[in-house]
Image (cartoon, rainbow, N blue to C red):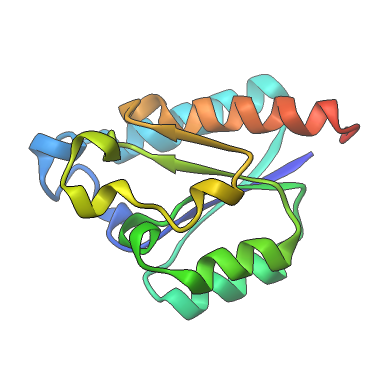
Length: 147
């Protein structure tokens, strides 16, 4: 089973940007380390990509060779019909993941263009977010007969 983790703009800056919201120094390393440890424990192959450009993200999604996707689209969550269409086009089940609780933040962050077509949403678990999304998606894929 292969799962692709996709991060949108500014997620490579976690630990540097707005530490009061996203966590301080070392937060991103903890996030990715926990994700990789969970993948190893589950026996799941993973690949992680980070991209700032909306069109490039859409191209990654539609060309993905995987069984499922975990996506943290960052600000594109609240604006991108293109990413929604790309995820639907890919036919891969996906989990929308957010490090912060987007529902406890500004009003504009409470609307997602992806949530209603995702198999699940994980939000607000900090450095455990991607690991929780991975465990959930791997379970869903296993139930569908993916090895």
